[in-house]
View 1 (cartoon, rainbow, N blue to C red):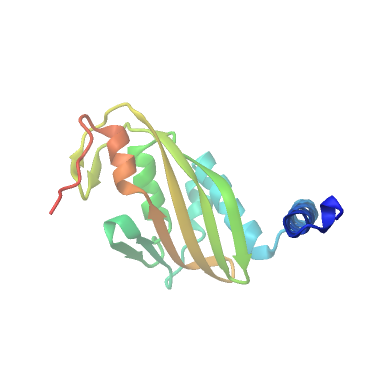
View 2: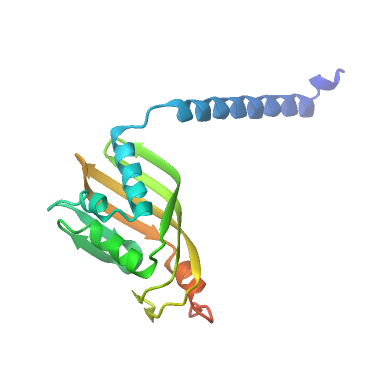
Length: 182
């Protein structure tokens, strides 16, 4: 019996072929993704994060409209109206004046977008948080975030911002907060 005709060898060969084919398809898809033209929605949101990294409040404010809403999920706080987009960013810059957002992935599905990334900054301002008032610590932080957007034209209709609040706070306070057990 040939080595490739045994059931285990056939299974291994088929599995190896599938892995190779999958890796090849993923490589082709990634190459195609790098060469594609971003959608209008994707370009708008990338422009928003560029403005965030430059602290360009004028550009950020331009994303707001009377119908805009921004939900900070960890705080369960929604901002509405013309200032719904600029106010959360301005508050963030007051706490972390050197704040930046690195986009790790961005998926656009028409007017809906999901952005995952890492926010970074130095704690220089007073942070009124659900964990209490945190005085400036001078500590740096890096926090994972996921922002979900719905656009209406070139405005943000709705933004839901998710981030690891306790992971963030634990980078800023000594000793770290502890979860209470039941």
